[in-house]
Length: 210
Figure 1: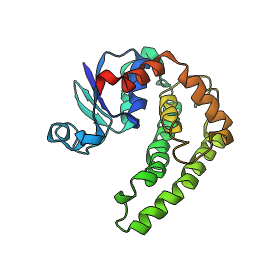
Figure 2: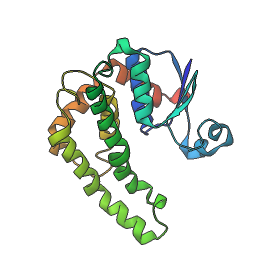
Figure 3: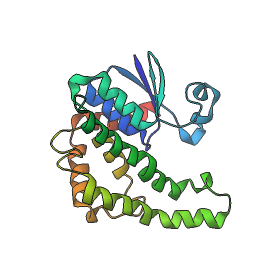
Figure 4: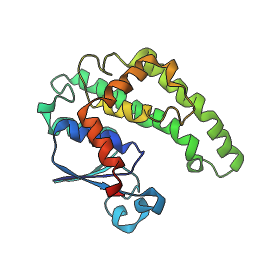
């Protein structure tokens, strides 16, 4: 059985939602970043990067959200979470998710984790100050050029949608007013109404798992 390691409020939510959308049988294991669960030897033996998500499969451990989302889509083709029969269309899915991973998430991380790139407190503070503009520019581009509507890739729901939803949930905390992003705001609303999304969120926020 698949096993997903996640932490509340992280990008692992995208993989959690995708597993629900796929109808996969899996166990979800919550890590508590407040107690540095991600740095404990038991978890580092699973994911030496010390981050989430990590998905344990019969063939080994997968990390990085785009890879996990592609694996879920390919492992459960009947769920229709990616255009597997069209190489170009599938590459477009990968391109979108790669942008979220390599650019949008990194811009967000500058608000809270500037220490990854600098030791100077002034530099870290400047990264924090710049984060709203950097994140806002990313989402402006997605709004104008990258989201087809009603879903990211158009009429078909794909693994791009839970990933965008996950990062878009951070907009307010990143200092970006979602009102300026009507497509993304509508996407976030419709995603929140999906049963799989509600189930994944309920599981992640359940006090019983804390």
